[in-house]
Image 1 (tube, rainbow, N blue to C red):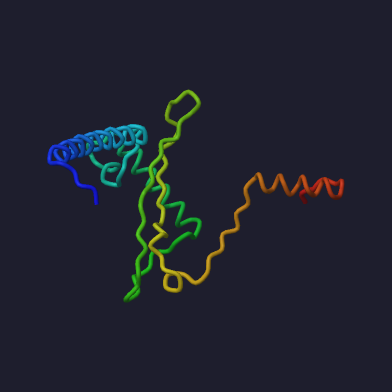
Image 2: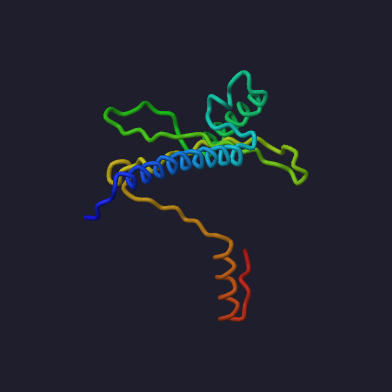
Length: 156
């Protein structure tokens, strides 16, 4: 173990104090930057979106109604009574303002997303299946088809 003098210990504690002050100031500036950069006038909560003093509140309420209507029309969910001892998966609203090319507002979008990270395998679900194909993958398969057979894929 290395021994240090009392004056060295005082200097080290002053440096630690200055460092923690700088760290706190840095984190505050990062928090402010992230908040400003991600806001774009988009609410961060349901309460903020629907608050009566929010001038955009009617547009956000309309976006919420459209999302809930869409979920019901597509059979994504049904409102049912909660079974006894059931683990309820929470959800949250995600807010976006869609812009036109000239930066004017095109649409207010509200999406209700499940917080699936709280699910437990074997309790909340037994299997998952999500068939998703990116356009890059489809192009690659079409290109491979053409290179190996010399024929293009035709849609029917």
